[in-house]
Each structure stands twice: as C-alpha cells, then as structure tokens.
Image (tube, rainbow, N blue to C red):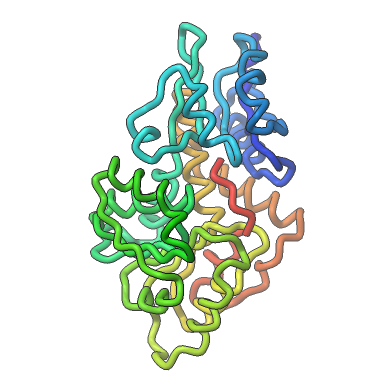
Length: 303
C-alpha cells in the first residue's frame, strides 16, 4: 500500500486544527494509505521546501504567511485563486507540478449558508487584509457586489482593491470609526484579530437599539468568543465563529485532494473534540446561538 501524503504548512503552525479535520476525513472515508501532518515553513523557505517533496505528496493546505508567495511558486493557478490574490491549497498535477487554488471563499459562503444566509443585499466587512479579499468574494457569490469595507487605513487597502477589481466587486471603503453603520446591514464579516474589534464591540454592547442586528461571522477561532462575538450574542444577534469557515474550506480541500466527497459531520466532530481537549473557552455560553458560539474558536487559520 503506497502512502499518500498531505499536510498544512505555515508559521506558526502548532495551533493548526487542519490535521484533526483531514485525518478524520481519511478515517471516515476508509483512506488508510493517506496521512496528513503539519510543518513549520516560513515564506523565505517555501520554494525550496516544495522542491523537496517526492511523488507521495498529493496536496498541501497553506496558511499565513505563505498565501502570497504560493501564487508565485505554483506551476498553475486556478481562476478563483487568481481573482482573490491568494493561494491556500496546493494540488499535485499528474506531471508532478503544483496547482495553486483557494478554498477560503467557499468556506465563508458555506458557513453563511449553513446559518441560513443564501442571499445578501448589503454585506459589510471589518478589516482590509487578505481574508477580507476572500470575504468580499464570498459576498459577491451571495449577490452583494457593492459591500462596505471598514478599514483603519485606506492606504493599506490596495491589495483588497486590486482583488475587488478582479472579482468584479465595487467595495465602498469607509473609515473604521463609522463601523457602527454595519449594524443596519444583512451580514457582517469580521476579518480582524481577536482584539482588533474591541472598540466596535463596545459600540455594539452599548447601542440604543435593543433589537437583533445582522448575522456576524467572526473569522477568529481562538480564543473564543471574542469580545465582539460576546457583545453581539448579548443583543440576541446570530454569531458564527471561525471554526465553521475553517471546517468548510477544509472539506473542499479534502474533495480536491482525494476526489472523494468530504464527510462534513465527522470532520466537525473531530475539530470540536480537539478544541475541547485544548480547553478552548466558549463552550460554557448559553443563549439562542450557543451552539454556533461554542463551535467558533479566535486564532484565524485559513487552511
């Protein structure tokens, strides 16, 4: 039985949930010859590390800081990865080369659909980095091609603007201090680190309107819940955590690498069990969205 290998690469990488998710998929699918591991790889070492891989390697999940450099190293890049401007998946070609792909947009779309969001008229994004590019791509797939993006520095949103042009999206870039306007939208996607939205969380918690706002997808997954998620939850607003995005993008990776449908629920159980064993906080929360809150987790990991 020849071994088929896959792994998640990035730096740092020890926190990654991807091995738990992918290995659970292999077990459920009966793929006994498949193995999934993790490896610390820095951006400067990526090209050389790829050259070291033998023919047993079938695919890679790529997290930060490798998503940009992977665009340059890949022998071929899919249209969806080119448009977003980031690669989080490497797939082995028959000739030994590598295809760069992106499953982040899919992960966001499926997370929102699972929460009941199938169409978005007005979507808002907090932050203007690489994950924000995937967020506006996801909103476009759900019908919103003019999302509002709240950033601290418009000068640092060039990458997002370029991605938007490739995606056919026309974002409205607004200053961070006006983010409270997002409470009137259909969906808010926060792509900032766990402490990055704290001041906005205060505005949410202290707002005058007691009615529930739009659904919040917070891509953070450890620690969980973030202050923003807690504030949102306290106002009876629906919240989806970063684990859901990670789960669904991993499901597409499994399908692309193995050619088999991903066992979503088996992977969900494995990821949740791993988080519980780590003692990730958030499982004690109760309320109308307690299940989704408990399955979110604050480190952001796109692979």
